[in-house]
Length: 600
Image 1 (cartoon, rainbow, N blue to C red):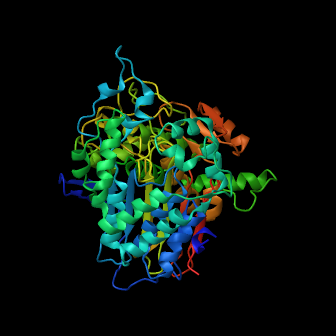
Image 2: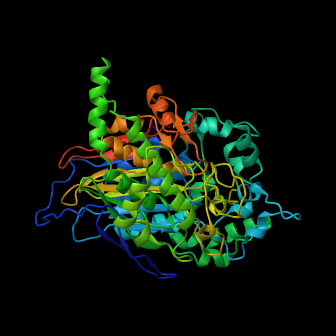
Image 3: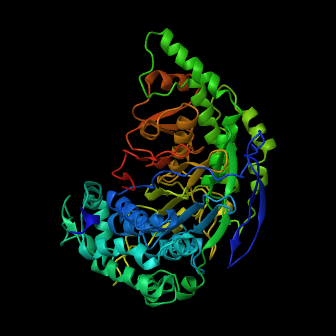
């Protein structure tokens, strides 16, 4: 077995080769951006760091760093390894977003949008029966749910534009893992053993043959070999991403989807383009927040919430909560945050307002007008903040339209020893995507069409809201909650790299880790591991993970919040924190089975 198997003025200028457009953004806080002297180069980290949701993928990224690669090389190597070892979400058949932040004040941060697109012939009518009733499973299981994959083009573009090493070297760890096999981890073993997953994959063409022996799922520790996937990765090296769009793999995608009743055509694949965008920029407590613009809602919501909270007296509430704990004779244990019910009320209401805006205004800006200037203007943020009273307000912006979004995505964060950072989130949508595998090439296709607001007024699994801005149109990208983010200190030095899977809970997970680290001074491990809450406007109740202080829960209820404590886990944050010139600290969320690893 090989080694691998052992807020200030900002500008957002999308630059799409297929459909160029531009908009100007004035983000996102009431205070002005600090002014820094960039005449001296700041110290860089002593070592690079990779954090992902699978130890073997993390190891692949670190191996590339040790071979002279930078953060882009390592991020792509990690993402490609996740295609092999984390098939629930790692993929060649899905899409995502990456933000690249170079440690060079002469270069601007860049966002790559390689989100999937809707086939040209797909309409909402494909998802209703002869009685005109919506059939949810059509957008989740099988070929109608498949959007044009963006991952091959996006990962290749990131490495080609920002990496140092030949692509052949960067992809080799993934090829070896697929060709030689890897031991199945308990997380994957449990996922494959679930009855619904088994049923979907056994019906998904080649997927059953790849993941099961007969109908028996692999146990933890069994070696999973994927020669067809290895072949697809080798073709990727030889012929580049075109093989997935105009080449033989693209032909196989189109033919297999059509044979099963889908409408994705060869022309949909050949017309796909990666969009290169400027990062959304905002400020929070003197820190520069760099994140992703639409068609992801994550960056907008993140900046809205942080900007609203920046105007509340968070420090005073923290100090008062700590003092009350001491006076009561029960001082806070080491690593705990001094949280108050009032501060949590502000968190919840800021999230509620941001998700209400998401529902009404956000979509693919190539197809709809997205009022970013207004949504992130200091004047509007101030009005929203003032609207937050002392009690819960679930009646904000009542709407009746809904859309789905999955919890199964994967995120990775990389910081190299030169100070370059890459934060990358990718997804198949639901776990194992559509369950449909491309014959002969061993990778699963997404069911990302389910992220559109397919029909108005239709109840859904996740309760997420979407309006006309996120309706299906050919070539359009569905709205996402992916929130890959990089935070910089003064002097443009990277301080934090983070992101998460989790559907709409991505946004709330990233927000809470930032708040706990920067406002409540928790260690990164404590901030990532702490229990989370989630509020997405509709449904009106606020979900809490187990582990919250019962007194804090009661204080929220006293403010008329409807609270539901849930057994499920929220997100899986993969984060790096680094003091200037110091060793980076990496934390992979204990909610899943990932790892953080520094260069040796």
